[in-house]
Amino acid sequence: MKHLEVVAALIEKEGRFLVCQRPSHKAQGDLWEFAGGKIESGETPRQALVRECKEELEVDVAVGELFMEQTHTYSDRIVHLMVFWATIQQGNPVAKEHQNICWATPQQMQQLDFCPADLPMLEKLNHIYKAK
Image (cartoon, rainbow, N blue to C red; front, side, top):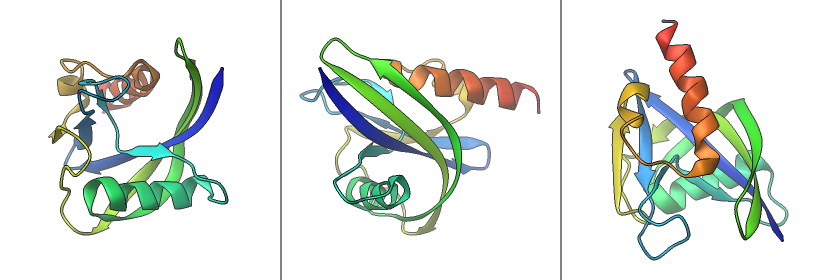
């Protein structure tokens, strides 16, 4: 089974997070996720996240602390996902590789169909933001 090292960005603005809907023709098509992607050979996780945000959203990000990491097994692959806090330093997000992007609160995200690997992140975000 294929093992993938993947990074994702938690980009927050005024209590809302940037989320992206995957293209229909890709694996997990039409599902929602946080911006990010696969780590390429020779990259650190943070370098990969900066590159992916530039490619997918046309924004420059500063990558902060690790929010969480976890491993999820799909039917055809195992994904090790590292999720970092990130801040947009330059640019406005554009959906270059996704069907849609939007800013959503943790509560609004509960109404979206997310990729299974992202569900633990949603639970943790909901727990944090319910406490506030």
